[in-house]
Length: 102
Image 1 (cartoon, one colour):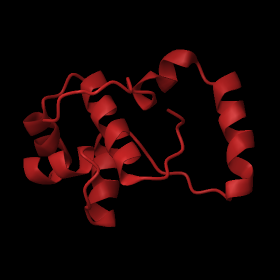
Image 2 (tube, rainbow, N blue to C red; image 1 turned 90 degrees about the vertical axis):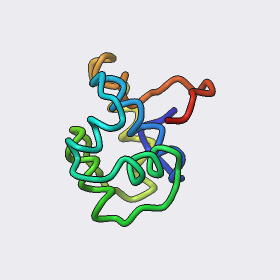
Image 3 (cartoon, helix red, strand yellow; image 1 turned 180 degrees about the vertical axis):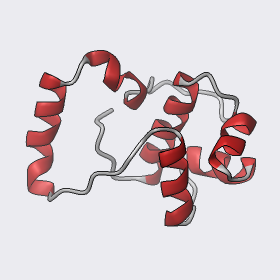
Image 4 (cartoon, rainbow, N blue to C red; image 1 turned 30 degrees about the horizontal axis):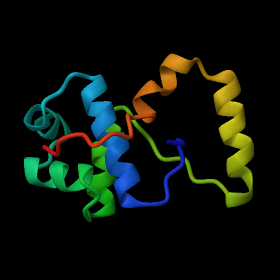
């Protein structure tokens, strides 16, 4: 998966991958983020959450949003792949297999 996202399902997979990378259970991650388990589960499964809650979860898990023009995404993805250490991208590139939903 690319680090750019186009759907809420992709956002959810990245959030879940980051939580797993930090070895956090969903209830512990929800407490860390200051949100309910229901909200975090909904987010991880591609459901709708308010933008302020999404940003709160991303920040709490050490993630951020970068908004750029679409015409620049290919260039930035190539630069990221070339210059970022591969281990730094691992949480952003979750296994596409069917993980059990929590």
